[in-house]
Length: 268
Ligand code: LIP
Image (cartoon, rainbow, N blue to C red; front, side):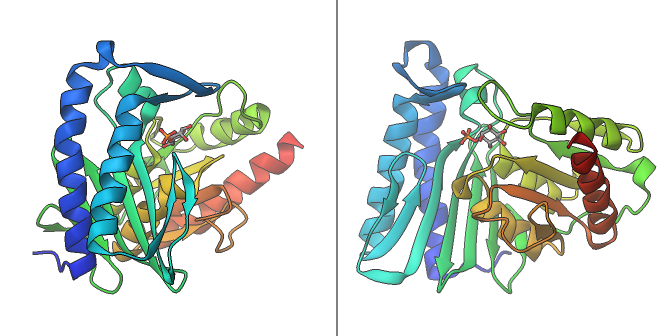
């Protein structure tokens, strides 16, 4: 059974309740009112409502904590030592297109350190949780990153830059380096679930650029608690706020990082 701190317990409850509503919204996707936030980055009424539900419930349980959310950015509170980092629908484009691969992601920082994380896929009812120092779980099952070491056996996940995002050529170089030596590359469209799948040993690694902290906060903790390594794409410790990320097991992280760095350099 996973160890749930009181805060993690509250986060799980909030995600489950918001997830139930989200599933109903997903079923009515065609009737939802849509507004354009930026290129290929749609915000739905469901997105806003889910975030409002999560913030309200977490604020009630932990008054005073700060928030960083996809829809509102920073919400200040008197307790500066705690911050929830929330993505109400990670994988918004999937959601909008009726593709059942998206998640609610909630991370909690204490004194600038990620201490609790929840990623909930309401379609599959998969609840991923992690508590710093107490491991990562999928429902009741303890998670470990995959042990694979041979590059020709690994499956990597990534995110592809799209309209309005920079780095298309660099990505093509990275992809061509990786696809030549691995068993396969996947692009599923929800960073939080990509990280959860790394923690669960389904993917052997995952890299992406152009990420936001709410996409990855909970997932970074999950991968680390499952025994994996997470860095930014320079190999440094700025994966949460820096916008780039590589997650993999201990044996694969270094060679994949080198491969991606070399490819990015070749792209100029
Ligand atoms: C998404 C990420 C995904 C990335 C998308 C987007 P959102 O988050 O999870 O990995 O490729 O561009 O950032 O916008 O659905 O919360």
